[in-house]
Image (cartoon, rainbow, N blue to C red; front, side, top):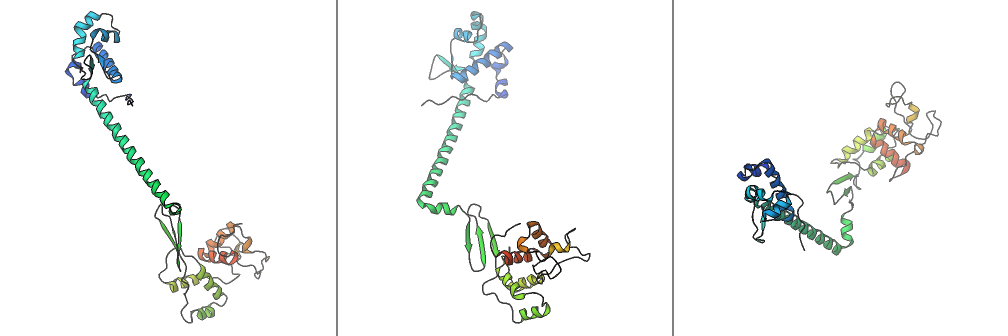
Length: 291
């Protein structure tokens, strides 16, 4: 199978301008020389015959060309070892071998790459569906930590929940009930046990006490001193929490019917943990409905 010829070659001005034979040529002879090396690149050789060269260059005066021009041009070429009646250009032969080595290197790299891909596919087919499962995110669950891991990136995101055997210190729940009787602390404790925290917690009792700081009595609204919520321009009735209507509201302000914008306003005032706890109470665990 014959190799495809390279369509171009590198032209280095330093090489050609430092050649004494080129320096002795007239401008007309330099043009002839450039034309001959282009033909030599495409055809590999040129004929070692001044008459044929004269016709290739379309010079009418063959005798003058043969006597004065051809001897100088011919010095830039040498006889071909494979075809004695032909001439080759030494610099072009070096360039030709350089390009052949480069093409061979690229082809060898391509073959190696194809071999690795084939080996990988064969190995994957041997494992069957195990390979498909390995490329998907996997969820690993233990008693208190949910670990979502993607095998492709190696990144792991941890969400933690209080351990199943978590209990409060003796007397703590009774103390909270006496200090803040308006809060359903059994409900708060159940919310706390079901809540997923974004970061691992070292001290769950301390985390619980932080949780208590955001606890609000059922039906409570958080407003500023000017009668408006902490969210600028929002009336306090827009942040009603609960559905008992005890505060003079219409009584139909059910969190289950809130729009997503209203949930966001509630979160801006009460914090994300209280918002998540209320969502769990209203909708249960899993996907929350947005209005």
